[in-house]
Length: 174
Image 1 (cartoon, one colour):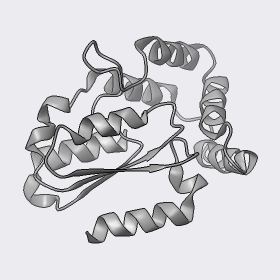
Image 2: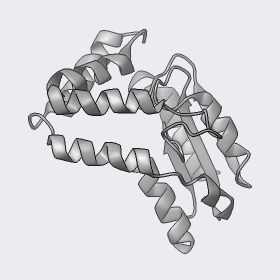
Image 3: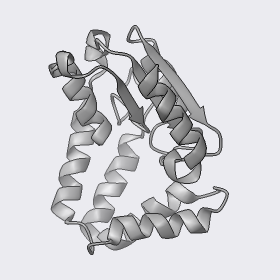
Image 4: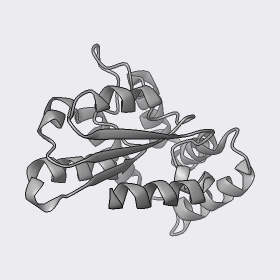
């Protein structure tokens, strides 16, 4: 969701943003008839239902999905659990509000107005933001480059830290 916020700032205050680097982000997180490059409405609804009935188990499944089939997946799973549950179970209302924001926002029509270079850093195995989203977004604005991390999911900075930091440094200094 931080990526949506960053996009909104870049669009609303272009004079304040020189570069936009997005990790695992999409301009439209839920599929639309003209946008198949996102999660299905059914998947989002299932997540929302799970949060309402068993938030801890739902978050555990989400975290497990993000580490599935990763090299050192168990280690990454432990790190993500520590981050997510460090202060106890996140507030369900906040998580539900976040899902509503993801469902409602579609910034694709505004992407041509982006006045800065955009770098999309995506995981090849990301279950939330498919690589095809990056390719489609690159067609919407003038200066968009996509980098895909093989075997990475939604958090390439955890699974591929050296490669991710190199890509980030390049994006920030281009």
